[in-house]
Length: 371
Ligand SMILES: Cc1ncc(COP(=O)(O)O)c(C=O)c1O
Figure 1 (tube, rainbow, N blue to C red):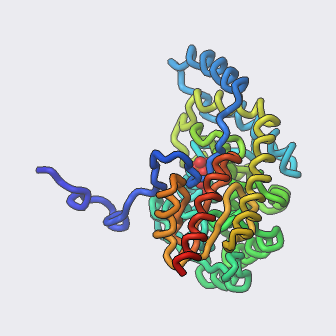
Figure 2 (cartoon, helix red, strand yellow):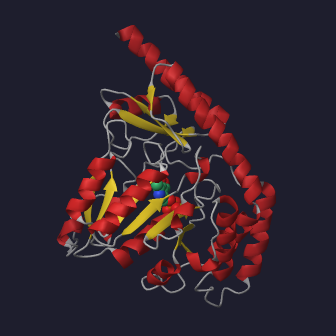
Figure 3 (cartoon, rainbow, N blue to C red):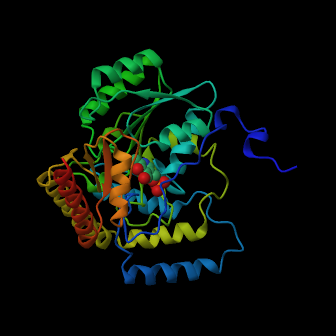
């Protein structure tokens, strides 16, 4: 017998589904997964090597299960940059913020419970909900991709979700969510039933505005989730973290696997945090490249959503997938997130962005000639 997936007794909600993932194509310019395009600086590579060598000697032992040294360093980073004092007891870390979100849904979602997100947004929120048996509610967004507050409050009152996701800056649209909107949604969620509100700040370091960490004061049901995949240029490391009331940290520990964060991951993240200031300089460069993409796309005749992230949503296209393919034919990989009429490009190095801008200007010319 040689069964296919549908011959196996997989859960009904997984039948006919495909695994999540952007195409990993071997093309000259890859601007499709919102990575940081700059390799880690050599002194940091040296420091990682040193710390990993040291840790390798102790690999016969399990790692620090509570990752205390790392969580302390993350708390110091948040306190220094987030405008709100955060201690080790407020911080939890896991293998990427996807795992943080999974642990949150394991603890606060699950069978018989629901989560809501305002779409289009980061599609893994819905997929992790499905994977954890949590019902998913697709909440509304306005025409301009901002959260339509009255409609969102109504959806929360009607569905009384257990978990509310707010992504700011939002992926794939790029726009940030104002603090007042988050406060209003938090209040709506608490009025409907005490539910957890997860603010996904994966791209916050690229924002024109401030982190929403100060909202944690007096809001025990609020969670801010972060990652080292974007601003720290360490997508390959797989390190995400959250800040919340200590009770939330206690709750996720009920579902985390023992020793989930390897000793190698912990020391590598610590080494990267030692180089925070250097890494944040790349963020400044990327922010100015992002702003250049916005203005040059507009000058070339494209529509662009306001961006507070390291990527830009641009359009509009009668057939976005066909346009995605034509940009790819010119050696540049962007992302089709399935938002009708729009595509997303990550800010790369100046040379990568030039290659992208040449490709899309070329498309416009072609269009003008044929139309
Ligand atoms: C909004 C948002 N949250 C979370 C993540 C996951 O990041 P990671 O698991 O690499 O920390 C991403 C990745 O693209 C994202 O866009």
